[in-house]
Image 1: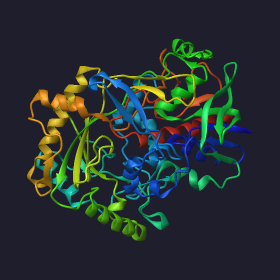
Image 2 (image 1 turned 120 degrees about the vertical axis):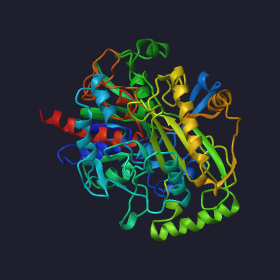
Image 3 (image 1 turned 180 degrees about the vertical axis):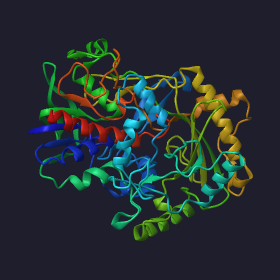
Image 4 (image 1 turned 30 degrees about the vertical axis):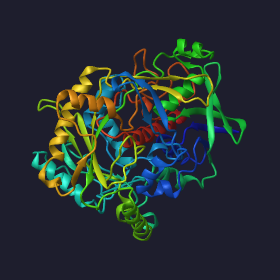
Length: 536
């Protein structure tokens, strides 16, 4: 099989790339995805994200684990990642958050030339189909459907009242002129037409409308083993599908879009990475790039949950299940109701100290109990709030477990390895407790799960016992100009021809917020770079 472009990974970035590149009828594109079609009811119905977390074996989910984390009492963290067309946008909470503008200026200052905020904003706008309309900061005509939640729960409004009581200003748009404050999240969701109320994953936004094109081939349940190299040039991708080993050759470029864990793994299996790591697994060294797999960053998250005194939230007891079933029927008819909820309906961006230059903490307020990524089931109705550290100093790494492509990557986020991270997260936890204890939430506030005496020692112990990722790993193939950069600012792999990486792994540093919208922006811009390169 021969194509102009071969894309390894059909997640948020890969779906965008395949759709954009195939707009040119004169080129051929092949997209290879390990998971399924990403269009089942489990994906389309927002509230079913909980079901995907509960089902065993995992559905649409790589369900990775970290190595034991010394900063978290030696626990192995859980790292769910999307395994379907649309990738993690098929299993996330649909929150549309760009981060702080200064995050992108930081990228440019660190060597990612041309990735400052002013340069990135047009690509955010190109992707965005915001139902509020277009303005200086937003687009209205892009494929990604973005809009306000139609029916937030009453408890969500009570949370915002509690924030106001704590002197946290209301913010109607976290992607507007200011990020600080509390408000409702906008979501990537269809808000009209036959798909009203359904999740708008990157695949639903970009890829599915493009799949009738003759020049686009989409292969699912096809596991990429490695990039096929001829010397230092990438010429294709070796993959397995239905038990057969196959090769898709690329006349122009191979693009790896397998995420912050999958992309460095594929590069290393292809002989591109740290020489010592490759030789330890008996792999040939095509290009000694020490930065492959390094620089892993993730948002560490700490959760406080309560049983609810009122039943207008989510739960897993019989009465709650009956309410959810009725909500499912309402959703099928109208696209509205509890089934359309992102679950994480509201949040806030806070500064841990008054002199912090920008928000360094983020809250997610959920209308249900999420304990250990929903792997610990509580039958009571409940609600929870999460606080995450937006710019951790800790740095981890991704490596290989073995040279077997079926082995999961070795993931070490090194959570809390820098002591400064714990101090900021503890401050955030105390700020969150102040909000959750406000009178506005009293009608819902029942028994607290995992109570402690409130001392510094008890809070630290609880964080080390229960904190984990909120699903934003980045940085393992970062772009830049220094010796540890894996890709240049055009996202071309250093020292290798015909090969790019396009996904969250190229981010030099974490952005101050959820990472799906920035990943889509990166892919939008990368598609333009690739088209321009082909025309030169």
